[in-house]
Image (cartoon, rainbow, N blue to C red):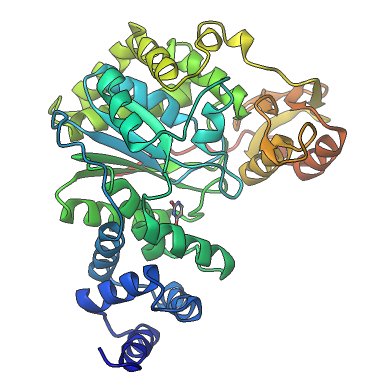
Length: 443
Ligand code: URA
């Protein structure tokens, strides 16, 4: 290619997306590989991302983008494993500890679960931060260690290592600085390029909507789910999506160690109803996607049995041991480290809880988790968070506890209190009956 001609083709590509003309597969591949290899500049890539955010890409262009991003990096070679490799992905919400519960249920039921998760993002706390509250738990395994753990336990929960998903790493950093995160096509390609790099046969997507979610409106969540399902199926992966109401936090705890504790209770069959219901259905669909059962009814029954028989809990113990964590904390969650202070926040009126500002609960939990005290380095506090005593629809009397803040530093506590003030809405009448937690399904 002659000097200058590459630039002309990039500008043509930018112009097309700007003018809403579709791009071909070759043009998308050219753009992605050019950016990853440094031939296309940050300025050009940022201009294209903004054009995509404003104008969108078609579902076909989004599938080409995902595939191009996937092809830029290595995939995990799981060809030596049995064919039932299934993962699930959540677009995140406040109090969403489902990954910690579902991975062991699925592995206890015979699936191979190579789960690549993330650290905290925005107002949501990452699965990896939660697991790292277990002393010694390692989330930075090498490719060799990932395969060894899968062989031993059937599941692994790790972060993407340096080599994985180079295209997403580069694009994501740029999106974060250019107000181009909120695009259905870009989110779809980002998530699906990483998930498909796991070499899976099946994928269950938990697409959240509401105040605690990335996609606030149900229509946007549905569109994202449709795009991801299309892309997964186009790559021959059995893909299912559930649209989940994340308008209020899931379960009763938001934090790192606090959520691990709630996950252990759920794995022991003693979790809150919303967490248990969601995990049973998500795991049920994983069994369907992996071909272990042929109906969701049978999948849910199987998942419920694995919880009640404590086989899923035994699998979680195995996972913790395999990844270097202190299993005594699983056997006795009271051993999980606890925060120095607790502050109860009480209701000032009688009435019914009509809403909880989930995103503010998430922000406050993130503030409480920031721990710079010991080393000066930012790190995630394994002990702090928020315990919710009342949920939407609950009756409350004046002086009754709404929530408890678990805190370690005065500065963080006062910032968290400020963010949380009035996050509970209380009215004289009960709120209208809530639509079910699982709003819809694409199966
Ligand atoms: N999570 C991702 O991995 N990518 C996005 O773009 C948004 C959420």
